[in-house]
Amino acid sequence: KYFAFSNYSQSESFCGGTKAGWAHDILGHNWACFEGHRDDGFEANKPLQANPIRWELGDTIDPFNSEEFVSLVNRAQTSWTAKVHEPFRGKTLNEMMSIRGGHRNRNFRNPPPAPVTEEQRMLASALPEEFDWRNVSGVNYVSPVRNQEACGSCYAFASMALLESRLRIATENKVQRVFSPQDVVSCSPYSQGCSGGFPYLIGGKYAQDYGVVDEECNPYVGIDGPCKTKRNCTRHYVAKYRYTGGYYGASNEEVMRLALVRGGPVAVGFEVYPDFQSYRGGVYQHTTLHRQLGAPFDPFELTNHAVLVVGYGRDAQSGLPYWTVKNSWGTGWGED
Image (cartoon, rainbow, N blue to C red):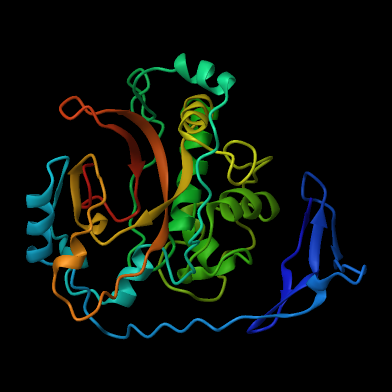
């Protein structure tokens, strides 16, 4: 297993080489260092200029946590209901950006769903019409909902929730551990603490290279800080991990449903619009009502929020298909 970051400075990317990286065997017992350099004179060795990102939202109060906005949402559609969630009331735009995923660049060119192959269509046709890991023959394999608070640590919560559920499934619920997101926030070199990260690198690579620890080993405090995980804590490792479909961009709904039913809950990236933070219940569909508030400018910025898909189905009243998703905004948000 090999890993290295592409070479960069504060505002330049050097695509023809890497930072010092590391490699290890499958079990993670033997480690080595390496660097990568492209030496064929390719243009990629030239640095690319990049403008530094500046966050200047300051203490502006988020205008979307208001009765006025919620009323607009509830009048405009019938598939879901909205309400003002008290923990969000009075939050600044900076605080809400952290809650929605952290100060990370959004990928403006998300890959479209991969074409569905005949084999995938055939396999998916044999799946149940509805499925939920919270109730498989009366057994719940999903760990309790938690609260990331004002730290952009959704990626850590989604990753730990995925591992918790997969462990419950693998042991037929005999092992019900709760893993530490704070260990990830404070200790992981593969993420940016409270400023965001990606489940693939945390539930996958970090868990394989460093292992994860139980919650009591490093309890959640929701802030960046030095790594305080005790050295004598037991670490639990991941043997293998992959993107759904095999690689980034290979997924589609059929592949997701197959992976969900066959293996367990799936961590996904979810683009959060301003109406989503007001979700109370029903089948969520994005509206564009934030543009009707009459604000002098639209301060909202899309962020990629990490959540855990635990099931799917079709709404009996509207007939709309849906994914059942475990969020990390506390038990007072959403349906359950």
